[in-house]
Image (cartoon, rainbow, N blue to C red):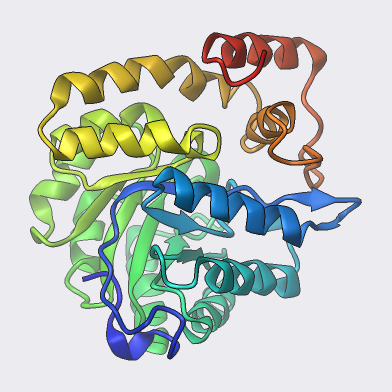
Length: 310
């Protein structure tokens, strides 16, 4: 169960329980002249729903949450929920390197009508495994809202070990994890140790297909920003037992999975979306910076091969 009825804002999700899984887009946050481009964000959300994206994550790493003000962060979450209007689950990014701030943002997401929160392990602080456990226990106790943990040691400097995940999974509000270690050994151990209903999601596009094969329920995806229809089709094909088709789509998109990390995410994704005509500006917030000319040309070649641009 992804969303308890009592946790959802009345009307926002029409009182329905919606499953979390599948092709979940970590949606970019469009900016124009330094400000949130609300109309473009709404257009992107409509495109994703039409293309078959299963869930939407606003204010994740790909959404540049770390450089948004609290007011901007909350507005993006609210606008996403309002635009989605209950058609697919919304998993709001609410994590921070401060437990108090995480609680505040998670309470806001709950009040706004999100279906769950995506809560990253605190970055920079480098807490111990016990510190990580206590952090999530505090957020769960204070918010009483479904949480997807987010483990991405390449960004945070700390790896949440499977044993710690399993401890957290005993809490009724900890319903899953986005595993972005790129390590299938670790993912397997998480699945082995946690309850069967615990939702394990790939945090990397290149491990989406293999994660499904070992028991995962989908992916929180960067590539879905560009190829939402194909990412959803890959997950649907796997769930329908059409493994050859799912594998074919995995390898079709594999060059894109690599290209989206020619530079720091979401710089390549935004450049690609601008080239595709989906957003008017590939603007990112400092300290991120515009993509180099050399990497832009490399990205263009991948997009041309996939027929995303001419």
